[in-house]
Length: 113
Image (spheres, rainbow, N blue to C red):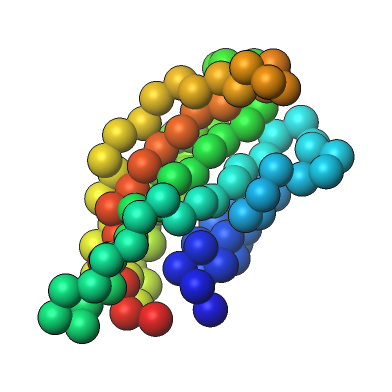
């Protein structure tokens, strides 16, 4: 299992909106995507930079979903395979191509999978 697959499954268990690695072909009103944007290993300890994007029909709803994502990701530290999960930044990131409101949250994760 990749770290992306891990967080797709984890967030699907912790959020009310569906979560996937890609934008769905027929997107629902709200959904979340997970993307690996960086990866490293030091002294056999794996780390990753994960981008989580929250899509909704309004900026306010996307912001609320982003808040739920942040809470769920911060709780991932309770899992034995996650050593740390730190929010790096979160911001409005409206998708200009689809005109869909979204927020992006970037996390730095240390893990043992």
